[in-house]
Amino acid sequence: MKVLPVEELTSEAFAPFGDVIEASDSAHHFAINGGNTERYHDLARLEPGERGRIIVSIFRAQPRPLPFTITLLERHPLGSQAFVPLSGRDYLVVVALEPTPSALRCFLARGTQGVNYAPGTWHHPLLALDEISDFLVLDRSGAGSNCDEITLTEQALVAPFRGTCRSS
Image 1 (spheres, rainbow, N blue to C red):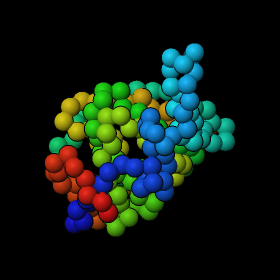
Image 2: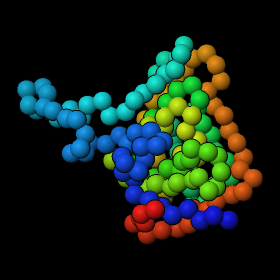
Image 3: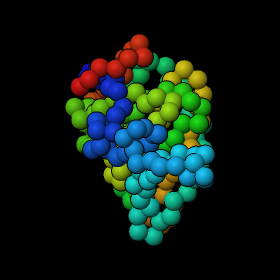
């Protein structure tokens, strides 16, 4: 069984899968509201797809104890799906361009980082750590089937780690 290294979530490392949503110095930002507020602008490419619209939901995720076996993946072929943590807690993001253990990547997302999965990106459902965690979710509603799930014939394992990440 493949053991997935837990990587730091950066915009560069996550680019093949979508966008990292965070207020970073590298993001386009500027002062608004008379200089009282800093706007971090256009952080993710939200795509509702043809005949779709963007909806806002809150997902409440139960914590997953580690080690955790990755047995299934899902993707949304018609639109993007964004997750922004509301509880300020770290969580894991497992993604792949192809639904195979060898293609899987695992990122540690800080409680200040959201992710936006590009349409068609394979990913594991929410992987909250330690406590129940709420997420603001921006995704697609509309005509057509927008969720494909697959059970992996070969599994992968996310092993316990000490809050630090290894580079791939």
